Image (tube, rainbow, N blue to C red; front, side, top):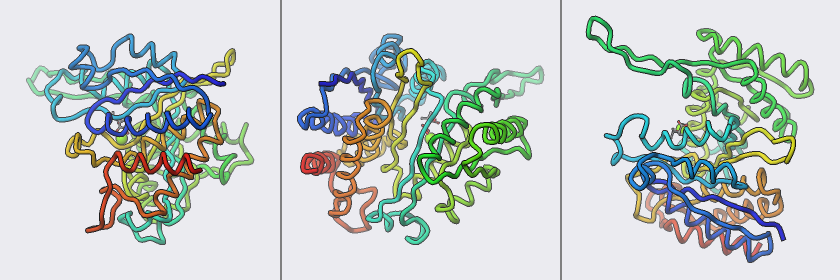
Amino acid sequence: MSRHNILVLPGDGIGPEVAREAEKVLAALSSEGFGEFEIERGLVGGAAFDGEGAPVSDATVRLAGAADAVLFGAVGGPRWDGVPYDKRPEAGLLRLRQDLGLFANLRPALCYPALAEASSLKREVVDGLDLLIVRELTGGVYFGEPKEIVTLESGERRAVDTQLYTESEIERIARVAFDLARKRRGHVASAEKRNVMKTGVLWNQTVARVHRDEFADVALEHVLADNCAMQLVRRPKQYDVIVTDNLFGDILSDVAAQLTGSLGMLPSASLGAVDPATGRRRSLYEPVHGSAPDIAGQGLANPLAMIGSLAMALRYSLDLPDAADRLDRAVSSVLAEGLRTRDIAAPGANAVGTAEMGDAVVRAFRAG
Ligand code: IPM
Ligand code: MG
């Protein structure tokens, strides 16, 4: 039987609550014969700062690099507002992304028919939506140097962040997007700001070249990132795959999330390059929602983004596509039955808690 070594990093806020539900699904996967899942747990974010003095320890980074997949909850919260910038909870996540080389962030936004009413947009605009944002995750303004606040001679302070991309960084994320588009509807929209940014010019030219040389069978459209944001709320179903840089991808994926009804629904996969020797790739799976400190510890959080992230791990890291399909079906059927956590419930309707939603998915999966 196949063995899978999973590192669970619950993190802060609602992270531990939603991670617990993913672990229930892992137990169900074992008992349904999909293999043995060995679970290790570690600290990340504010929890790691409190417990180990850093938002992620070297030992945890090593464990993450060796795991078949990392399941990541969420990090951050007002409790750590005062900690030094390089020790803030988010720095733990950014270090994991960078040290593991997780350059490709896949954020699918799917609007379940049962949830079209939960979106703040009209049903006909979002019903049946199925798009994928491919966000570059280890470059751009998140990591470019210099990144600092300096005091000028006048005494005034000046802040600088650096947006920086090389051609090879753009090529490899473009290839991921085109490859995925081939397995979908064959359409890529590449979003940048070539009208004001040099990185946008290079992004545009490089994506166009990779398209021409390697993926001419896929349809490619170039769109300015601000226009893309507008189109996403105007007519989101025009998109299949959107490929974009780290910062635009962060913003556009929050917009895409809300189209589907709730940030609580959006999973993500962060993938490294495939190692030609082993065929393995490093990977981390996390819900797009954050730590939601306002509802943390109350059992109200929606675990479906975390469970959807586990489904992506089954597909992209553990080679268990049948289990992934079955888990995706379990989530659809639970939603079709009418189960809702508070974030996706109609105003005034009854909502279930985190554990109840997780239990319902496990039940549907076992029945499945
Ligand atoms: C995300 C988050 C992170 C990001 C934060 C927590 C650093 O917003 O994954 O979208 O900006 O990438
Ligand atoms: Mg974000």
